[in-house]
Structures are given as structure tokens and as C-alpha cells.
Image (cartoon, rainbow, N blue to C red; front, side, top):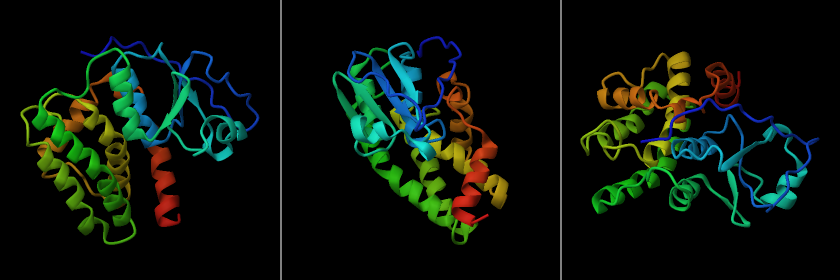
Length: 235
């Protein structure tokens, strides 16, 4: 079971005028951006494992990011990045596994080899899933987008339980930040309900929204709508 939730006060966002936190002083830091779905994956994992006091959030303003982040912290200049054990690690899917393996809290990958193999298959599909949905925004969206959500509906039928591997796992945290945004945007702009005819997907979303570790990380729906309209529709 996840650790009991205490509502987190989000730290102040750092921009180009902000001083750099001490580097490699023994503090574990998750460099993030509150609106980034890739960073949200790791944020949820941190919360679910009860690591709010062990992994400090360092939110950045990506539109006005500090120069020291690229120069001294993470040359890739992206989020998320984790400062731990005198090194910086990046890439969200890698960080999910890293946090699960290196920190205390509920294990988020099962020992069962069949489930682990399926987990890797689903991790691999995440890029295809995202690209399929994003590309549909510039085409015949209602016609093209369904295949991605049909894949998730099918995947959710493989094991008994509301989550991809039956019980909650890193796989759920890898997908939900993107599904959250896609659901909002598709419903608002295209009147497309991703859960229509997909009862497993509907239940999955409903169950995740009962988990404080995830709910605490959700962003502003209106921000998502406006951002995606600008990015994909030129509005």
C-alpha cells in the first residue's frame, strides 16, 4: 500500500534569475516542470513510494530556465533529471525503474516473469502511443486516434484487476500523465470520449483518480487545452 498522503506544498519554480541549489550535497533532488507529463511520471512514483521527504522537488521554468541547469546540472537541459548518489540521471522511463529499485516503499514491478515481460512491452509502446495520438491532432483525429486507445483497452484485459499488470505498477504511472492530457483535449476540442466503448480504460482512469499520489500531481485542464490548441492547431 502507498504511504499515507500529506498534501504537498509545491516548491517555488526556479527561473533564470534563481540561484542554483547546492549540487551533490547529499540531498536527492528531482528536477521537474509541473506541466511536463514525462516529469510527472517520476513525480507520481516518488509520491506513491512515500518519498516526499527523501526526494526534494526542484521545479524549473522551462520557458525561462536557469543557465546553470544545462551548464552544471544536466547538459541535456531537459526534465526530469534526478540528482542522487553524486550523479545525475535522466530519461523518465529509466528514472521510474531507478526510483523503484533504489528507494524504499512499495515495489512497483512484480516478480512474476510474465508480468515483467508484458511491462517491458508496454514501456516500449509508450512512444508509439504518444506519437499516434499527437499525429492524429493534425489529421482526421476521430478516425485516426482510436487505434492507440484500443491498444490500451486490450492491454488492460490481459490480467485480472483494474491496472495493466493487475495490481498498480510503474506501467500505470508511465501512461496516465499522457492519457490525462489526451482525454481533456480530445473531449474539449473534438468531442471525442476516449472511454466510450472502452470500459477497461474507463475503470483504469477512475481507479487512478482515487490515488492521492497521482491526484497531487495533476495540472490545470484549461492550461492543457490552451497549450495543445496553440501547439497542434495554431490557435
